Length: 270
Length: 187
Image (cartoon, rainbow over all chains, first blue to last red):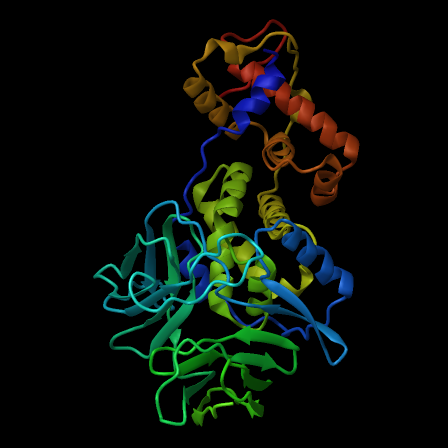
């Protein structure tokens, strides 16, 4: 076989090296706010091309919809409609801002039912084993996930006001999660029905007026939701849930260093 | 199934560091391995990977979802590598290397596949910087000649000549004995 052909074949087999441990945590700890948070006003083609390409790949099953908002286009994510593929154990390694491991962090993991085929009705959140699991990080700050149905986590440190939530993004191996200070820059609230019963699994939407983007939220078994936000912007929280009248709260602002707790929201039956 | 980069970038632009953490987890391996190949130095590759992501965080609005995010990140990584290299006052007597190789001979045939991969790994690391950069970007990263030329700030013809030279150096390095009239490139 000529050298160059053999060379090209072998290049694809060259070993890859693991990212040094702690690199991700150190990088996250050094993040400063972007110079300027951009106001998001997209050209139609900039959104349509990747969104349509992704849709045509059939992989996302309606992950995005395009909606006109005050004559601007917003890309609306629907978290929870994706079931990830896990190929092996995933270790979530919880650290604080300095990169130190956080043991005894209380971690909630959850997932969604996988759709039968892409494009079919969106999967439902399944509460309870095996699609919702509670765990504590060990002395090294680790929680190992072997259940491939679990895709999302939220974690709170036991003794410190630290919190993180997000998506499990690796198929296997380690994912470093940095817990950040809880009290700052959040909007929290609680949904109950007219009997005072907490409503879990609801999906309120947080609309960022300045950037015209929407973030999906979710209520926990006590009906609480939490949104991590950038201070100084104007927000709107809305909810459309079957069987209840729509809820909208406008003109929400949180100044730097503040934590906004909304009153308990009682949803009226339709 | 992964949440698309476009969505995570949107969230990160709004200050969601967890979303940026997800991007970091997803792409740091590729960026780190690219920098490791370009620099041949693990500590420097680690520093440059960190700088790459810190720069990317500041410039997230430059990426609008057209093209792969990983390609955009690799572009930033290469620029950081070039800046670091310039600081070392890099000079290289590339023209002094006399090269010749028999295009029909394949030194890799002497090795088992495992040996060939290990030998090739070392031989790429031992290439002169300018040849290794082009070789890594074209052959390993599968970038187009024009993209590499723009990224490195060199003419298209220089990309082609450095790639040819890198291939020849590898062939010489992997050969059992130095060929007559050619200097063997040290492994």
